[in-house]
Image 1 (cartoon, rainbow, N blue to C red):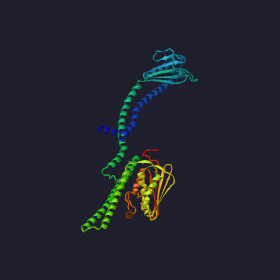
Image 2 (cartoon, rainbow, N blue to C red):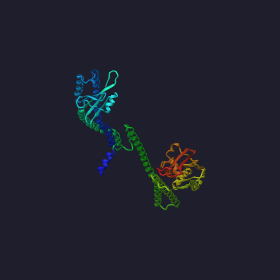
Image 3 (cartoon, rainbow, N blue to C red):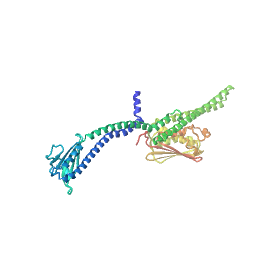
Image 4 (spheres, helix red, strand yellow):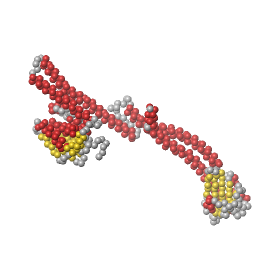
Length: 484
């Protein structure tokens, strides 16, 4: 099993695949090289041999015409030259006249006979022809004999010579090429192995830097500009590290804030209960004081419960796959119901709540989570408002999204704080927030509720001039990866 995994790891590695590609690029031409060299040598040697024969026949053709040898075969000089050519190449020379009659055969076999062949007919048309028979190891060259004045073809040479020496030379060359081929294969394998290791070295460096025990994952960037790919990989790694670092800082801050927020009510309750116990030790506790302390303890318990409830809501929506109950919902009626519940709270401070709805809206939402998001926005508009102020909610829709705008006449949010108000436990004015209550989780819950619907939320505010939140949510809820 382990051996199989090891082999799979080796065969799947970039180093191995690069090695195979380089070997194919290097070795395939080498395997074709041998045949190319040998066939090229053979063709060139045969061509040169045929060319030499044609040159000698061309010179001899002039002597034949001067001696009138085609009409009178008694020229000893011509006979001698023809036989010298035959002896020189260890071959056979045949002389044919215009009637295709063999007037000379250096083998003395076919003199006086008539010969008809395609190559001979083409020769009498003025064309030189040659034929190489590799199976029987001979070259046959047919050359015309022309008159000096009219250049008419009046005869032809047929020269057949063996190619044994060419075959022997080819075999010797084949052995030398084989040695060269083996040396090249060894060299190519070595160069390919080295080059493949060199090419993947930057990727190994990146991996080593990522896995290095001496590198602090959350503080050290890596840089590997050797290739564009390794540079992009380094940048992606650094971006991921920065995101993880931000998440780690956020987690630590969240844990710290949760500890602080949960501990504060507990501390208050501990102080109040200890005070009651101390009072009891010195005598009976007055009913008014006892009631006051118990009311305070009850408020701290309610606050603790609110923090825990908000934390649970936030954790549920933080999951990758939150438990959503998506259903077709009349958004106009749902928001009207939310405002009906909040109007008594607003009335205590003389704050007017108004709803503007331009069109009827039917959308796919989780009613509980959507209600939580809008309730938090409207409640914030009430809490952080001025006496006798107002909160206006407007609804609109297009073909794809519906829009909710929550606008108030409150104290506003400083520009420096606007990017952080959706963070957990973040408060713009901690002292004022303590007076009016709240856990610092409302806007974080609102943002998560909007995001799980694949929507978006924006804030626009000026200090002292009020705040506007805009929410955009798709009319149809689509799962991740789902398309319309």
